[in-house]
Amino acid sequence: MNLVAAAAFAVALAIPLGVCAQQSQPPGAGAQRHRTVPSEATMQRRWAKRTRDLNLSSDQQQRMQALIDQYSRAHPEGSPRDAGASRQLRQQLMGVMSNDQQNQFRQEAQARRAQMRQRRAQMQQAPNGQGYQQGPPPDQQQPPDQQQPPPDQQQPPQ
Image (cartoon, rainbow, N blue to C red):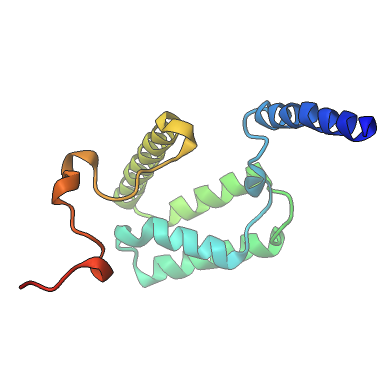
């Protein structure tokens, strides 16, 4: 019986240590997804999304697809990410765009980064790491006495 109690006590002491060790990882330790090369299809999809509002000509789109295809052959999916090669690909893709398109691309990228910073700040401020609140913002919610019951509990009008 003492052996069971001692084991339970040891487990109770070890759990907080494990949680503490998980929380004290250096920043970026969990960012494994950025350390390998994504598939060609993923890269094509990402760049198509980033450039969809730039009104690229079909020639520009084909040239960008060819550059991504060439990069993907030299850097297969899952291989370690080469920052220099990634930077070179980005420069080549930007070179396909006109000056106006490049400026618009940079402005949109800057706006996306600002939006991500804002989301991260909201996530950090959320109590207990709950993240985003579901439903309408608090200023648009109805008081409890005016809320409608779920549809299956509503009674037909009389």
